[in-house]
Structures are given as structure tokens and as C-alpha cells.
Length: 235
Image (cartoon, rainbow, N blue to C red; front, side):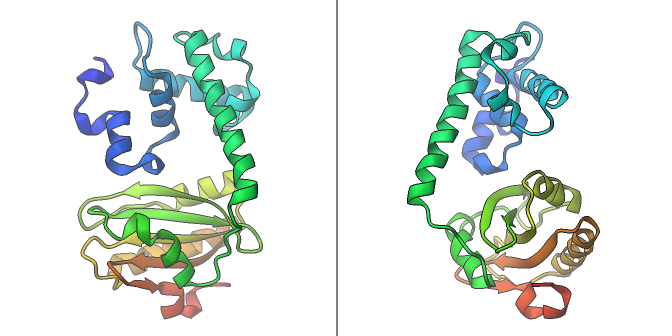
């Protein structure tokens, strides 16, 4: 079976347009770049093999795309000159975007729930599914990265602390803020929201990453659990 034979909602390219690039895994993003697989493997299979090779030779994450030579990439079955060129071009585009960002993008400091709401409301207020985002911060509470870690159903999203802190550790974040939306528009926290927040805070203490807040975004409103339950959080 090829990716063309998959249900529409499972295809990486279609998922990108449906839920956003931030919600896709590393393997799915790589599969879109690769475009096709080989005689026995789909593009997604090939992407997973590439990630496994990169981790074995250069460590976890996508950093191997920068470090590996075109010749090394082409040693993997199914990756020829065209695919290796696309991967290297993507790395160079990222480098140039970073250079542009140093001159054009202001440094974002997060100091309260309102800052989180203003940063994310355009992305989250109108979603028809729950999404959980994390904002990773440095020791000065400057934003260093944000990403979607969970896409749920109409009224619920499941997230495990492991997924949050695994990515924070990769990016050397000192602190993290959780944010998720309520498609109903009502930002009031549910019992599940409160239980999840407590669990994430405790996990953060174990790994040494401070959970600064959990912000729930509705339509035209938000609730900061830190501001509502100040005793739970360390600022």
C-alpha cells in the first residue's frame, strides 16, 4: 500500500492543511519533503528510517540534516540526489529565516497570562478541535520555541507530561507554559484541565523545568490557572 491508498485524514500532506504544520511529527514533515518512498517503503517509512539513521549517527532530533553531507544522506536506500538536495535546501532556508529573524523579529517576553493569550489567540480562538500548545522559555522568560503537541476531539485533548518535557529538554528550555483552547468558547477550566495541570507541574519538578502557567483560551476570553491558583506555580 502506498500513501496514495491511505485514508485522506492520515496522509501527511493533507494533515498539514487540516491541522497545521505544527501538529505534524518530524517523520511526517520529512515525508512531505521526500515526496515518494522506494520500491518497498512509503515516504513516511523512509522518513522514519532517515530519522533512525540520524539519531544513530548524530543524536536525536533533526540536527543531522544540517550535519550530514549530501553523500551520507544518499547512502540510504530511496534517497537520491533530488531528495538529498531538497533536504539540504530546507536546512539552508531555515538558516536564512533565522538570519532574517534576528533583524526583524522582536524578542518575545512572557510575563503573564495576557501575554500568552495575545500571542496565541489568532491561532487558537477559532479552532474546532482542542489543541495543546507549549511555549518554551529561557531563564529570562523569553520565548525560544512554541509548538502543538496534541490535537484532540471536539471537546477533549490528551497530553502526557513525557511529550511536553521531552521536547523542552531537547531545546534546553528553562521553563514551559501550557496553553490549550476550548472549542465551546468558554475558557472555564474543567476538572480534567485541573488534574492535568497538577500532574504536569509535578513532572516538571522532577525534571527541573518550571511550569509557569496553563492558559485556557476561549473565544474572546482566557483563563490563567496561575492567576487563579497561584499556589500551584513557581514564577
